[in-house]
Length: 238
Image 1 (tube, rainbow, N blue to C red):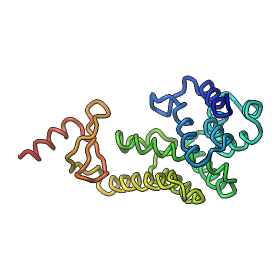
Image 2: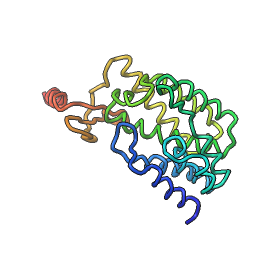
Image 3: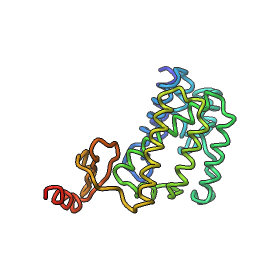
Image 4: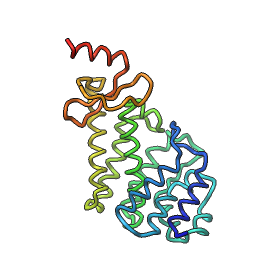
């Protein structure tokens, strides 16, 4: 196996049985997505392997020595660049701002290879936030140690600004689009208290008693319950 294949095999073992926060999604899909993003920016095997392994030290039983022994000092450095000091002795909500500020500060001095690993992790997270937001809307933020969407957007906006060195890559443009779309819906909810139900196209039924709509040719999506759906259909049929 090459280094990337070895990293995937090790990450599968390390994250075995774990799921993404408050979901049934196998955790391993997140580092694999981060690795795919990294591979769209570089073909450096160490960087892509580190993207696969970026949460191993932070979230599994394995530590720095395990990474070094299997993948070498450079991959360890890259993994550590994306590893938070979680301060497990304290409640995560108390340390959230400190941990995120540390990440933003770290990016300022990050080497280019470290920046790719950090950015790939955050874009994978932002993709997940956007996808889940379109199905559960404001309930999404309850999953996080910091449930205030404005503070979450402060952090992800800070990542976007700090990673501007990657501005020539399509992944960076995607990050900006996702950030603007989420921010727009958060603002809509704060202003009106709901997501505008004036839509015509049913896109999906992602869960029991839920409907996702798109308004005309707009890219904005929204959710209705069955009851709201029936009322909506009745109104536009009159």
